[in-house]
Length: 72
Image 1: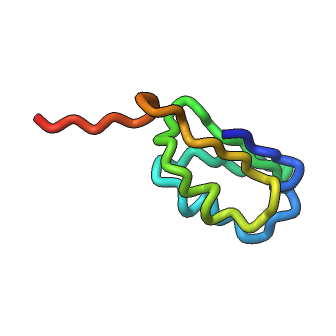
Image 2: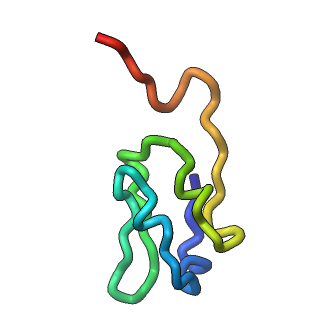
């Protein structure tokens, strides 16, 4: 996932701030956005709710990578 923070600056909705289940989007004091990649669930929710074309570039992970749910 790649975030284009320049495009995000013109967004008034900031849906990603609310929709991200891991709360990885952070709005800075100057109005730009930062995305913390380290704890991303790779769910694609931010990509689905974003209404700014080109702000988020998302490619689903190759099979065998990403989140792995285990039953115990």
